[in-house]
Structure formats: C-alpha cells, structure tokens
Length: 290
Image 1 (cartoon, rainbow, N blue to C red):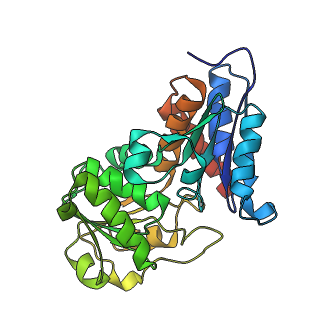
Image 2: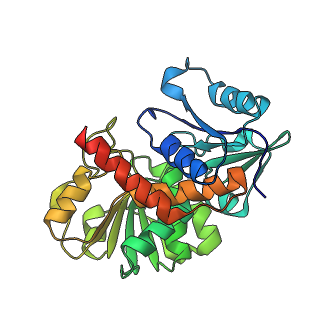
C-alpha cells in the first residue's frame, strides 16, 4: 500500500553528494505516481565533524517523520551499529544503503546489490563470470561482490588499499557463499591476466576523487569492465576500457535500479524502473550540455 495522505519524506546521507541524481530520480518517479514526495540531502562534508554526526542525522530524520534515508560513501558500514535490525541481504553482506523508519525502529536494507545485478543483467547479459576482479572492499564493493556471487560468479578476487578491510569482506561473504568463491588478491597483474571481468567499486573516478583506480596498461581486450561511479558517467576507467574494445558498463544503471528498490521500500509503490532509466538518461544529457 502506498503511504498516502501526507508528504513522504526521504533523503540521502553521505559526503560530497551535492551533485547526486538521487533527488531527481525519486521525486520524478513520485510525481508519475501522483505522490507528494520530498528528498533531502544530508551532506556530511557540510555538517560540523563530530563522531556522532551520522547518528544525529538519523535521529533527526526519524523525529521529523521521514520514511527513510539512503546511505552512501563513507557510511554504508558505519551506519550498522546505529540500527535496530537488518534485512537478510544487508546482514549477509555487512553493508547498508537504505534505512527505513518503522515507528521508532531503524531498519537497514541493501538495494545496491540488486541495482548492480539488474544493471549487469541488462547491460552485459553475456558477460562471463568465471573470474571477476573487484576493486574496493567498502560498502559498495561488498554489495557488488554479493551480487556477482548470487549471480553465479565462480571466483571474485578483491583488492583494496586496506588489506584488513578486504580480508574482512572476504571472510564475511565467504561465510555466506563458501570460501573457495571469494579471495583477497595480492598480485593484480596476474589476477587480471586470467580474469573475465573487472568492477571498480572505489570512489576513484568521482569528481571529488578524479583519476583511474589502476594503471590503464594492465587492462586488456579480453575483459569486460564496469564502474559504479556515475558522476561523471564516463569515467577515465570506462574511457580507457572502451579504447581497448572492452565491453563496458557505466554506473548509471546500478544507480537507477538501487534507487527504484529504495523508492519501493520508502513508499510501498512499485516503481517503473525503465521510466526511471529514461529519466536518468535524459537528465544526464541535459547536464552534459550545460
């Protein structure tokens, strides 16, 4: 049932999110359903830094009657101790990107894995999943690894600048899918030579963190390459992979599909994901022309 008769309030918590398209996606889809819907940004870069600022944002939103909040970098794992319970998917992968308020309770969900799974299925339907390299063991990386393993990947090799973080993620997901299917990488060059695909789940490539997460020279035409960054949509990694003739997947699809599932959780209304994809594409074209 749709939550009718009042304004539905939702929002996004994260750092450096002023160019996020989440408000546009949510509000545009809500209008198509005739819903009174607002979507606010809680940019942690603009909030005085304290250890309790994430908790304060959650408590404020709950007190003001929000239906829920999306959570993005760098808080997808940090938010977990502040919640009352987790969905099965969020608990299994150890990361939350959506919090739903049910009365006084804060329930953590993860729609990122669903977003990546649907986007890859749509954009790279024939991609081989025997061996996939994943860059970044944060919350987004955990969600993508979870999606790949759910979708049948035989082996996911994880690389992160923080070895302890990659080890922890491998242990978390190895306990769900089996330790033989996910590993922490040590030699990226060797791993890439035998890999089918590569997914960037680091923030490198975002406007705030420009660049490419690995030397372009290690890429080869036998890889498919995906990036979850969507601002800009065509990252340096995607450009380098395209130049080599690699099949590529940009971050827009994951963004749209995860937003669609979060919208359903906030409103109780089934969104039209294809309409949201079209709206996203049109908005990106407008932004590029500006």
